[in-house]
Length: 448
Image 1: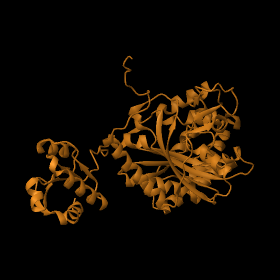
Image 2 (image 1 turned 30 degrees about the vertical axis):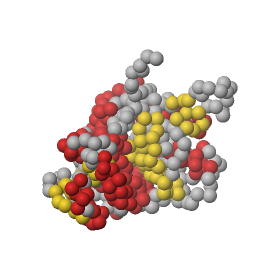
Image 3 (image 1 turned 60 degrees about the vertical axis):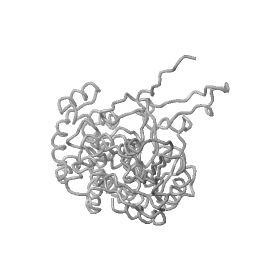
Image 4 (image 1 turned 90 degrees about the vertical axis):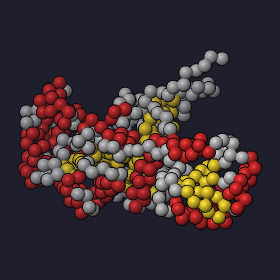
């Protein structure tokens, strides 16, 4: 049989232990923050019926990984049309419709992989398989829920060690009114948003060109320049923005919601420097209906958004006659890891083992195994050396794996009822009575 070249599918990755341990620390931080805000865990299948996933976002419909059943010869039916989920929000909407007994508001968090047939861009943390960390509040129209999502995002990023980040806030409702005000026709909304969302990348002249190429009448488009300036970033001038869009009631209503969310988020402890009103923020998903938000690192614009979300009051109604309001956010684990690596705060971890028990003679096996069992019962993470090797090799392994303590129990130590405990960080070594081993090692671990 020919040897198959080992390789991974482009846009996917293996995570070796050192990197995976560090990723799990990130996840622990995120999950702890979610729980602190009262969110409960949820998991859904990786595979959904195709009809569940399609029709919610034109952008993501193009990126679906459809699954062809390899065996069985089933006919092509709705039952056999399946795909990998591209996000966790659509499955949540399906769950809410499928289980009406869930409490309202339903505050759920979900941390699972998703798949998109996208072009991989590792430098930006963009892959075909990636992990999303979602937090959503379903069942309330209160804008306090949107503000709480923003505050939660702020705390997560702060807890992860980010310092200079910006949570950008806008509203699809505001943009809908603005589009009608600028173009004179609400039918231009989606094209208008796609063009406007590129302002940061291509500048105003580029946006004007996009308007022309998309057939968008832009007789009043120059007013956007004034409006964007008036939005003011971290110190928005809501009064000036209101004067510009006062003739459009939808834009006025959207602006009022932005102002309320902005104030409530500040009240929840979001710092002045971390939150901005960006009038041209559009975000791509079609199911957003109200406030929208995303987080960026101004000093690292190539990374893109670390988190993104908003209000989507109509999504559940695609699966149910009942209209259920909802808002939430996605924090991208892979984007977070990429960003932490860029700023020098992502460090691979060699091992979580706390103690290595060395051995070099067959007579000591029973003694070593009993000691390992006692330590593990006390909650200590222990490895036992398997082979009769020289101590130099075993100490080298402990050093490489960053194991803080090595226990040596040779013939002489066992005869005296003792063990030798070496602290690999200080190189200090001391003799400990076997009967006191668990107590002494547990105490030593508390000091590191």
